[in-house]
Structure formats: structure tokens, C-alpha cells
Image (tube, rainbow, N blue to C red):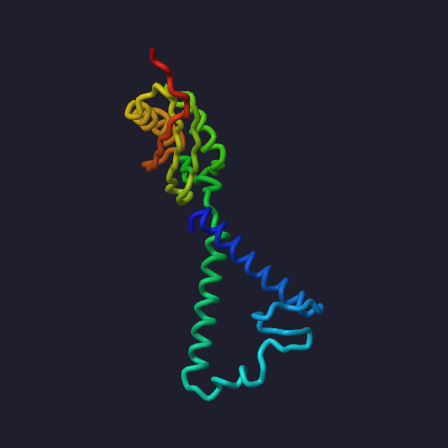
Length: 192
């Protein structure tokens, strides 16, 4: 799930549950509910006996309830898994050549690649995110270009210099990258 969509769904779910819980609590404490509210007072039950036993003898009722609850639990577990999954690669596993392996912090790798990208001509700011597996990382980079920078030249320089240096220094056979280019906002110049 995208971060923004996740936050919106979480906020809407929280607001809905908070409003329902607050309304039930208010009625339970004796606040007079509006006429359309299904429960009228603190001693009213959520489901009457007739509502609880209405569908009891229908053969489809219990399988439908169990299926709906199963789907609800699976959706909640998928949401929890998506929330807990790490978005960033915390470390890289680098072959040292002697049969061992060294661990390189993902943040250090990201910072070094971002610093080298930001130092190149035409780049105002660079941000790098490392994803993938420890032995096969994938780079996602955002480069904010200066007003007079040529995007093709900046992209070529980034892939042949900064990205190549990062791949060689980590001893990786390949380092796939997704690069997004954006421009620095500036005011239009007046021509007279």
C-alpha cells in the first residue's frame, strides 16, 4: 500500500471507531440520543432476542458469517504485514573475496551515494533509498535539478559515475536503479 493511502485509511477507520464508541458511551452515560439512533437508553441491548435469532434457522447464515469474518481477519493481517514490513534495506552483505562476508550499513551506503550525486553538476539536491535484498540491492533515487541543468546529461553522469562507483565499491555485479528527476522551483525571469 502507498504511504498516503495507508494513512488515510487508518485515519478514517480510527475516526469511525472513535465516533461510534463515543456515541455508545454517551448513550450509556444517559445522554439522550437522536430519534434515528438505534439504541434509546443506557439499559437498551445492542441486539434484541428477535434480532439475534432471526437468521438462526437459515442454512446459509453461519457459513456467510464465518466467511465474512475470515475475509475480515485476512484483510487485517495483510494490512498489519504491510505496515510492519521494512521499506528500507538496513544492511548489505558484501563478499570479501576470502570466503567471508562483510556487513555494510544501508544508511551509510545511501548517504554516500546521495552525497556523490548531490556533488555533481546540475544537481541541487539528491535523495537515495535502498531497497531489495541484502545481496541484490535496488536503488531508488530522487534528483532535484538546478534550473539550467540538462536532464539527459545529469542522468548519464549519475549512472556512469555515482552509481558505478557505488556498485564497484560494494563489489556488486549489478545495481539496478530507478531515478526520478525534478526541477528546482524558481520564479520566471522578466524579459524587457
